[in-house]
Picture (cartoon, rainbow over the protein chains, first blue to last red):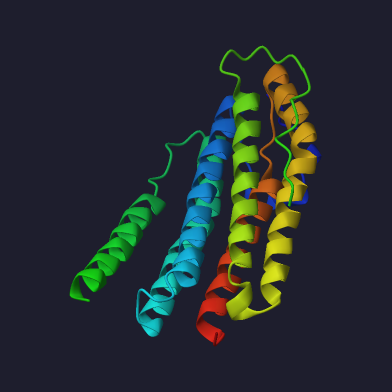
Length: 126
Length: 117
């Protein structure tokens, strides 16, 4: 196990202080999980942009803009949450502590459900 | 941006039957493609929101390119980390990617809410 703290970068020292390096496999698994969340976030960004760009005649303009901003906002929060979650998991692994609960999971569920339900209701009313 | 597929990983022996470095590199590759796609979708806004959408697409392409050019180094680092049983978390890449996607999101929201098509 490499505990040579001096070889770590400034940012790593600052954001992940103390503890010992976890199993490299866990570090890589945490990295892949982060990337999966980032791709989820990117899908929301693309979805929001697409709603605003392709659904021009489908909805009332204010509604469309608001919903697009909401969907992009969910993507933005998921991206930030992915970064925070990666840090927290890495930190707990360094301290040999149990992993934290993923708060971005309910965010993902609620965000998608809300966006989908709103579109359904508006389409049904028109 | 003409994205070539991720470069074939340098055959560095790491002895991990779970092929963790390979899977992680592919995961970065998929993320790189997703960022490129989001950048390209921004171009669809070009007629409504004007020229700075090209800036967003270019910015996304630069982020994707920076992932592409660091893939080989990343694989070597990760394979070496598995071999040596000691791998330092890549804080810079993670924070950088988070920040880049967050900035794309903020600019996207600003474009939707502030520009009159």
